[in-house]
Length: 511
Figure 1: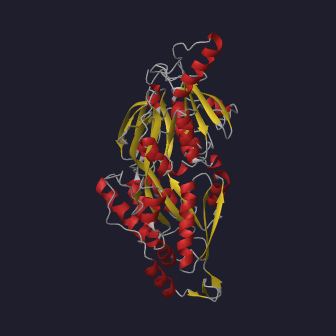
Figure 2: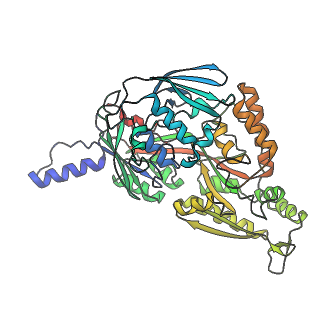
Figure 3: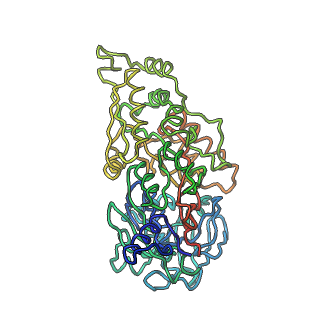
């Protein structure tokens, strides 16, 4: 069944009226337009970086597994897997699968995908997720064997990376701008900064999807996206959204509303390589200037849950609310800063040994709530004498600076945190590939290594809680909130509810 949208009905009726002078039966529109806050960065699943990348790639590619709504790995390109021993995983592949160019999928494509992800030349964000892999071998035409350096508990949860065509890449095809997958949708075009268009794959193994075309439309302003949905120019929008828009849309019977606990944290990333911010006691004191209640309840309109540590409630087996970051207390923060030797000069700015306590807060320009948040934190910091400044830039320029360490405190988020390892190991171990703030603590390193290598869940629990406790005390990250997930779709859209809080939309495949 194709999806019908309010916009298509109006257009169809108008064109028919012009042709015949009367209003005929309503026409069917087979396109669903999904509003996104940022443009994609890469459509190569090995180098994906942001939410838009992941949502598009989930439709274009298949991974070995697919996570269900409870984040349990399910067969996808893999029909089964067997943990032969603690360091050997044998995966059996589905037969008869072809890429969008008609080439059969083979074990060689799986081997190619994972070996290139691990190749430093590719600079894949996912490389650290697969660092424990010692080798990947095609042990039969439809079988791949992963040999690990040590037991690695989260591996199955990460095997949803889209499998890429070896032949195409080796022939020089650029998957980042023109993807070729085995998924239910085929790439049509990408108008940079505007839209990415996909069409149904008629040869998909489960049959052609019910929605003929899906367009991911970039519209950076959150409220503008909501207004576009109301006007019928978009068929679906998702978090991030402003609280006022969520409240208004939730009361509008024209739209379906999906609300889920998220798999995302919104947090402050402290650059510990900064001479001032290298002191964990100073970072702890600054953490007491983060007023979570105002930020979460007023700026984010109560859509999120105040964070307590790097552990997420959605991973209930590891989470505990007994681990706590510094709580908001301006008086205690001022005293802590004074105890560290920071005293106000004649201009009211805190200084120590002739150096002012100057800090720049930064975020991206596309999210008004983020901008309000750092403006509010700036105001609080200034009240106690911190020389707090703000830098705001569009997402590509801003994230490039963060990645290169050109920041003091950045407000950003991590998404798709399906396991505690995914939000901690690469980001907070001393040599972590995504440790942009250069945080280093050997005890945290050891705990996070144990958390990913232990086969016993209780051992993993204890390891992650140990690491989270230290991180909460030393504050390389300050978790502002566990982000809630809201999505709205035209009530006429079939399958208009996202699959889960990652915002994946294979529900649109329904026939």
